Amino acid sequence: MGLIVSLIILSFLIFFHELGHFTVARLFGVKVETFSIGFGKKLFCKKKGETTYCLSAIPLGGYVQMKGQDDLNPLKANHDKDSYNSKKPWQRIAILLAGPFANFLLAYILYLLIAFMGVNELAPVIGKVSPNSPANAAKLQPKDEILQINGMDVKTWSDLSRYIKNSQGALLFTVKRGNKIKNIKIIPKISTLKNIFGEDIKKRAVGIMPSGDIVTLHLGLFESFSYAYKKTIDSSYLIIKGLQKLIEGIIPINQMGGVISIVQVTSQAASVGITALFGLTALISVNLGVLNLLPIPALDGGHIIFNLYEMIFKRPPNENILYKLTIGGWILLLSLMLFTIYNDILRIATG
Image (cartoon, rainbow, N blue to C red; front, side):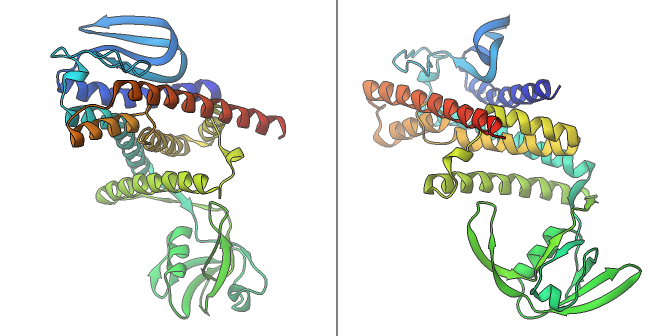
């Protein structure tokens, strides 16, 4: 069941991405010859208007085939009025940007739905107090619930972490312990901690860890729109920083995951609940949007670079160079796909 859910989600994300390209291409009068979900042998096709809609055998991608555009052979140009090649560079860039934009839009919609359903966050309840820490010296205890810091309400563990990180001097914690409310003064100290990329960072901390309890936040209408926007931006930033750390060698390449990892994690999220599934789907959608903007010739980002070149120098790139770069881009993408699948299989085999 988990595999079916994962494939449906991947197909839906690809459909939404390609729908972005399709919509803007048609807006500029470009003929779309094929709209396919999946690659390989076509299992089902139906022609409507000028476009043939297909479901193909390998549901790990998809494409919109526009008249005059051939990613596998960019030399097959066509300059008819309804051709992709006949459009101005800025129009082609808009068509290319529409796919990643659709992924960001989908992520925003999913985060908005999560906000409407209720946002699950870690509750500001202490699970563990580190020895020799400011919290231990102040006699904070497991199961203590932090209500306020310096008079500011604490609703989630994220609020708690942010207040401590951005604070200066001593902090007054308002703590609920059993049926009693206590005010406890704590002076944070600079500690060396690990960030999500495994790097050592220094920040103000008091030495407490969450219990794992969950609190559900019910947001108002405007708060929900703000939450969805912030989550989309934060997710995009997280993906970009992750790529940066991968290039810098901070994240080992053997931690790269592929399709199998996506299926596994999606299956786990589906078993947790609809909110977790929506959250993961939004993150994968942002991932697709960011990755497609990378300046690799076979991706949208690479084609955008080619069109920017034409805008600046008033001539298209050399056809032979364009062809070689595109083939090189496809080789790079296929190599990365095989490598991540190898990582996934190795990870499963070694437990």
